[in-house]
Length: 64
Image (cartoon, rainbow, N blue to C red; front, side, top):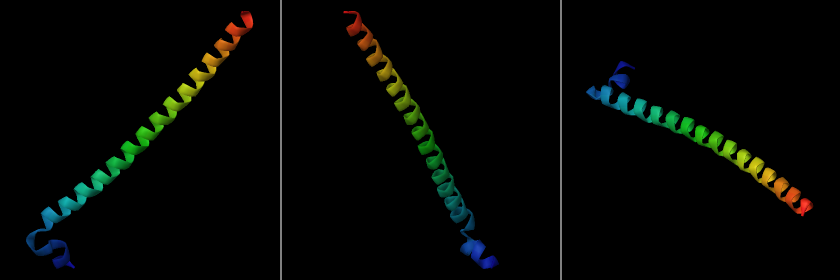
């Protein structure tokens, strides 16, 4: 088992490569979730703004 983890003297480089890959995968997942959250907020804001604009347009038409 000790030989497996030593990996022929290259253990430091191999395990650092695994750690870097794992870190980047986790960072990408976090970044995607943040972008999705921002997209949902922007979509909700746009929908709210569009609804408000349509309501204002209806009031303008009714007053004419």
